[in-house]
Image 1 (cartoon, rainbow, N blue to C red):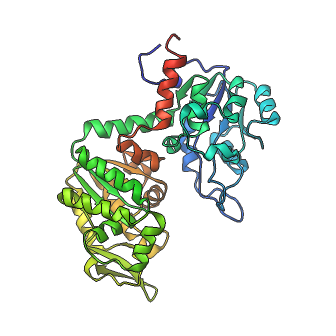
Image 2 (tube, one colour):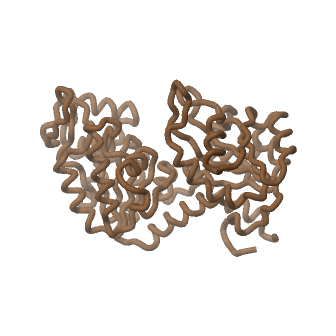
Image 3 (cartoon, rainbow, N blue to C red):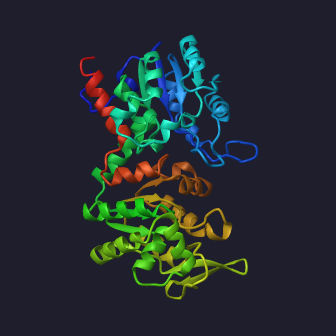
Length: 410
């Protein structure tokens, strides 16, 4: 047995084995037709399934969460996976009940079944310690039917939920190809590049501020560029008025404490953080770029401004590696997609190592440039950022624990 912290598909014999594979195909869904609008996450798991051609596979995954419009069954996901793999995949409208367990028992070598949306099970949305998750009904009902559990859902690796950390407590768990590729890529950036720039945008203010603080305190980042609502928080923290609508939105999705935290970061690391010089608002149906000193008090900021785009993209030329997470503005609106697309386009043309992560910015990246223009497009947003805080990813820790518990003597 290889001397490794966790194992992958190559390290075990999967031929003829019954394997539970956790993937992440949480995707944008058309609310009326329930049609899947983006299949990139499905394609990212293709290598894992190809390596398991001679196994019996049951797939578990989630789609959205209770209360949201796109919270639906995995029936369409089953059809999409079958289409991409060019193999039959059977949908089972059950998670761990009698029907699901019978289907698992009836599988033959080469079969794939896709179980129901795991978040239809109420305990799946609860964040608890791995030992507790290992004692849930989901885990106890399904583990007797499987030889191995494969974790390939990197985008959900930051969550401590039964389908992520529970199964490795009870059966041997190994890494899928996507999971391993993601971890190896992130480790490479942390270890090999000293002059790394981070571009952090979107609306996840709390997470981004934690990441920014950690990156700067540990000297992981040479420069940090803030965009999106994260930038609005830092613009406010730097003493500029951003208007009631923007301040209220920060309160709605986070809290005003984040502004105070941003102030402390700026005070200590001002020369390491680049905030926008100008922003874009909508006026009479048109885009209007204005300096941050003249932000109207009744308008929502929708993008970084043209001067900022020019300034940031010029500075990017100095980096060895660049990590981009979160869009620069409301990129769903054509007039306000300019910031996101131009930053992404510039990154794609750099000689530096380029990593794009997070659903929205990945969509923008793929709409703007060929995938091969980037060194790595990550399937994860939250998991990607948590990795760079040095906070341990629950899924990765569960794989390591399982390696020690079940496979040290194999």
